[in-house]
Picture 1 (tube, rainbow, N blue to C red):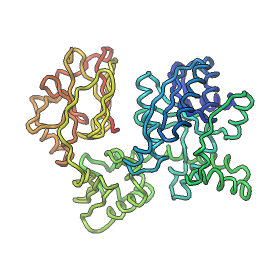
Picture 2: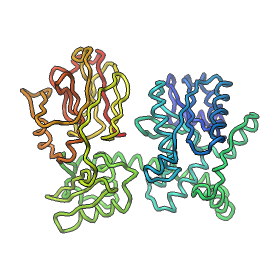
Picture 3: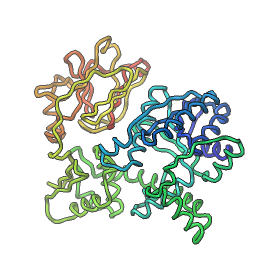
Picture 4: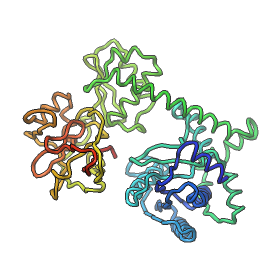
Length: 465
């Protein structure tokens, strides 16, 4: 099985020589097996390994024992170990989501924070072929398109962190056989047998029934289907990028061009455009996309669709516009000193600022104020020992845009970009000693540019949390 994992890593470029890998280890069979295999592959591939364990605050003493077990195992294997603790039930109540969804969100948030702390390039999780099969069946029963039925991918990015999954072609039975052959113990989570959880019913009842009466190799068939759909989904995403570029303007989506596309293309364009404008992908349902499609094609010239309760899509003047709902609580003025290097999270406006000192000049065409992610490179000499401040917009603010003469009011920039008034309160402004040095999504100020790509600069990335 180690050769199988090595082949998956090589074929999908999941781990490269010289990288620092953070592996999530719950103490269960899958993660323990992956830890052992990666430990053996470390000298062969040439990467650094750190183990991470999150205590979910759910299972009391059992969870405490899981933490102790993983810590002892990593000490025995001489692998660096990091851990954390959170309250998943409280997170679920606060966000109105299931325990499973809250636990997933907590884990990936924890991985992202720990990766930044220890300098890891990516995180690795132990999802296997059984997880893949269960996920596809769940998506199929709930109703999903090709993207949903593609299941779990070998690689994704969450919270700005690259996540890879080398075990997707390995079954749970193979994992158990591997551990027994190594005489390696693992921890059993009793909640995995609780049939009140939908995934457990699929695992213990539905899948065995289908394997017995329909296809004994069902897991392999579903995994193969996922591989096909993932490749097609990547190709369709590439095509959709071109379509979005064709019909997108700074102030909205052009209906004349958009309505010429086939229905399947319109669905993908809408999803990609909404996500690019800050709407969380998990909050965009199929019904919402269909409502927007119907509004776009309707003869009436105006109309609105509410997206996940926090966003409003308007149709007017042959364009679709998306903005935060006016029913959302107004954002109070904010001000925060930025860590350099490091991470600063602005929870009130849902943004994360990551900074580093490194050579290079950020590239990419600005898409307009309040569009994220946004990157900039600022002169280290210009900053000196002064502090960099991130704050909210104030009436009268001006910037001396690089490449332009004189200065310009931020309010005029917002008007030119057709940025709704309600969104202006959330726009982050970077200031140093009273001077606005960067408006994310627009330009940096004169005097703050990096002239030599080889010189060390302040690299800033602003992204949605």
